[in-house]
Image (tube, rainbow, N blue to C red; front, top):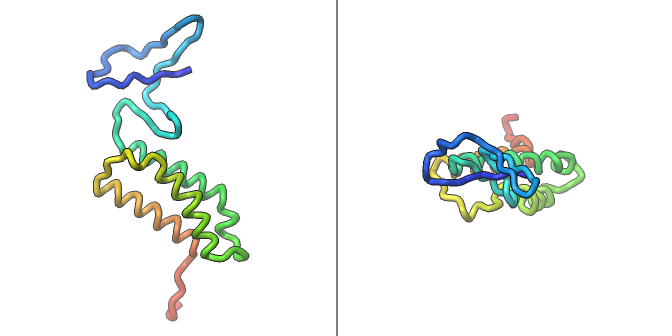
Length: 125
């Protein structure tokens, strides 16, 4: 098992393991707890990067459906809104976003939507 010590004080203690009743607990710098990314630095950028990585995995697990020409765009958009976006936004109500963080999330969403809808065809193309 693992443990993470969160404290406002500087972490000057050496990384050490704890043994209790024959069980050993390893001290770690970051931890995934109930799908949320916790770290000693406690910055939201790490959480957002983790959520984007997990959402990307969710998208690529469904990539055969998103690339299929047999499925309508409306159905693909519904899949995105019900599977990929909730994975990205999980635990988002606890985030305090900066303008940079909001922009990063928008860029990620546009990237996924461009993959789903494909290239835009103009009269010039």
